[in-house]
Length: 277
Image (cartoon, rainbow, N blue to C red; front, side, top):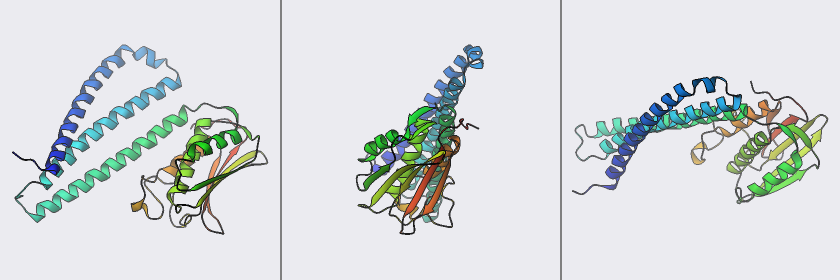
């Protein structure tokens, strides 16, 4: 019996969903037994251990949700590609709505999980004194290939020491540079600048794209800038960057340059206590 490629794909998705559901059920059972055994240990664990437990819980939920979605999408694709459907075009329209809803739900689940993961990483951030100029210079070198269709330039004031989280700086830098590359034309310049201003350091990323829209809250999750349908991602980059900026007792500002393009600037104090709330 010959099976078409769409039907085979649908069956594979169904089987994948069933397999994931079985694995998660068995894994959850073992975890419950382990939780009872280690209840006293977890009750006295440190914050980092609690964060690891929350991250594991999020991972379990992720597999459960994606397993269910694989089953829903698998059966929907199977019915959509079945020959001689009983309700014809009307059934096709119903199937299309089911598929769109399932794909939308999957996107939202991925986004919510990313937000929770970001909160855990912020709570577990390690603080120390380091040279932000040296750190940003190294990050620029690492990102040259990632934004190879753009020209990445850096203007960094030397010896900008700060008491902060290196990982947090990495997250902010990555999202700002990725956003600049995503919304600016190939071959254009992305400028990274760092300077000291009074008791703060200012790290700015400037691109030559269309700039930030005035009527959209770019730092809200699920929201993208211009031409979102042609860009990958779900609009979380600047939202996560601002979350980290707040955790570092700083701020993130989004401006448009008079000569064109967007300017995203991080201002962080040279010395401050972490804000993990």
